Image 1 (cartoon, rainbow, N blue to C red):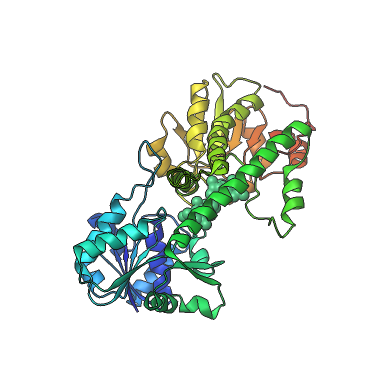
Image 2: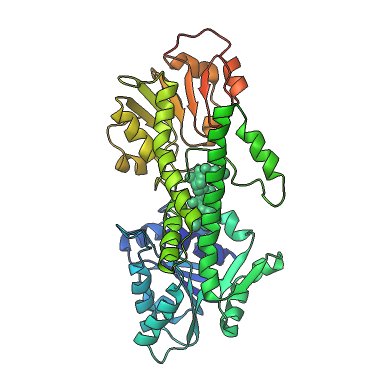
Length: 445
Ligand code: UGA
C-alpha cells in the first residue's frame, strides 16, 4: 500500500508517521520547502511526545518520505489524504476551505489509476461532495472515490490515539474505497478496534458532533464548578459522583479555565454555522461557545480577587501558557485572555512554560520571560497556574513560599489539594472546591 499525505501540519505528520509504522509506504507532501528540508534533517515542526523517534525509525526503514513534489507522490498512491489546514474564516466562523480545495485541484491533475481521496482535515458537512465535484471537473476521466476519515487525535497523546483509537470512522459507500481503507487500517482490525463505515456526510458530521459534545461536557462541569464555589461543594467529588455512571463517563469532566486549542473553539463555531445554514440551529453549542469565551475572560478577575481585589503594581507569576500540557500550541489558549487582562489591571506578569515559550513570545507582549518555574515566582506577589504541566504538580512548596512575597496561589487547573495547601500556609484558590484558611499566619495582601 502506498499513500500520499498532503500537508505536514499536526494531523498530516502524525497520521503519516503512524501509517508508516503500520507498514504502509507514506509520502508526506508540503508546499513549504523549508519545512520539508527541516523534516528531512529530522527536525520536528511541532512538539509532540514520541513523534521524532517514530519519524526517524520509519524514515530509516524507508517507509516514510518527505517531498514538495505533490504530483509524483499522488501518481504512485493508492490513497491520497488531504490533511491541510482549515482555519476559521475571518469574520463569519465558517471553516476556510481554500487550502482543501486547492489541494483537491492539484491532486486531480496527478491522479493515476483508481485512487481513494481521503479528507483527514476537519471539514464541514458537504466538503466531500465539493471535492468530488472539483476533481470531476479537472479530470473527467479519473477513477476515484472521495472518502471522509476524520481524526480524533489529541495533542500531546496523538500517537497513542492513532495507534490505539476508541474507533475509526470511515465515510464512503463505495466498496472499492472501503476495501482500501480496510487494508490501511488492517493493524487496527487485528486489535479489534471498532471501525464504523457510514456515509460521507454522516462521517463529516460525526467529527463535529464529537468535538462539540466534548466542549459541552467541559463547559457543563465548569458551570457546576462555579456553582460549587457559591455553595461550598467540591467539583471533583461531583465529577466522580456523576462520572462513575457509565452513561455519563468520567473523562472530560475536569473543571478549568475554559477549553482552548486549535480544535474545540474552531469546530464548535463551524458546527454552529453549518447548523444555522441548514436551518437547524444548535443552540446548546451556541451557548457553550459564549460561556467558554466569557469564562476565559473571567479568569483574570478570579486571580485579581485572590490578590485582594487589585493587582495594580503587583507582580504575578504565571506558570503554564499553552492551552494544555505536552504541546507547544498556544492557539486559543486561556493565557491569551488572562495575561493581557492582568497587565491591563496594572500587574507586571512574569511567565514560564516548559514548551510554549517560543510560540507565547509571538502572541503576548510586555511579559517578563523566565527560564524556570522558580525563577518566575522569585519576588512575585502571587503565582497563578494556568496549565497543568507535570513539573508544576510537584513544586517544592517551602521553596515557593520563600520565593513569593506572599504565599498566594491561584490554581486554575486544580492540581493541588486545598487542605494540603492550607496546611502548608498558602492562601490557595482553585476552581470549584472549598478553600481552607492557611494554618500559619502569613502577611496577607
Ligand atoms: C481535541 C479532541 O479531544 C480530539 O479528539 C480531536 O481529534 C482534536 O480536538 C481535533 O479535533 O483535532 P485537543 O484539542 O488536542 O483534542 O485537546 P483536548 O485534550 O481535547 O483538550 C482541549 C481543551 O479542553 C484544552 O484546553 C483542555 O485543557 C480542555 N479540557 C479538556 C478541560 O478543560 N477539561 C477536560 O476535562 C478536558
